[in-house]
Image (cartoon, rainbow, N blue to C red; front, side, top):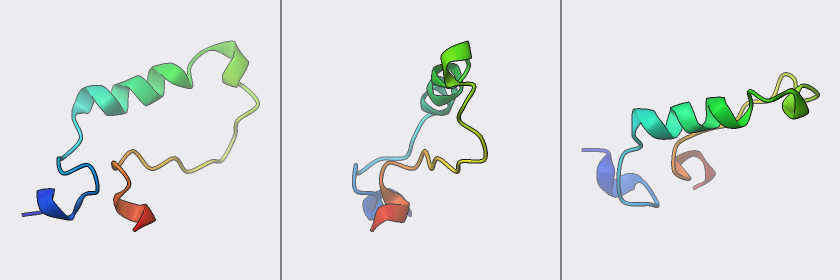
Length: 46
């Protein structure tokens, strides 16, 4: 199981991925291009 490997101790929810999409949707975020933003609770930062 992957859950214990995550720094937050849980698997992310679809809502948390959707929250990032909403955060990047406003016109103020239009200058952000080509970035990879992991939504993984810190898993890739280990």
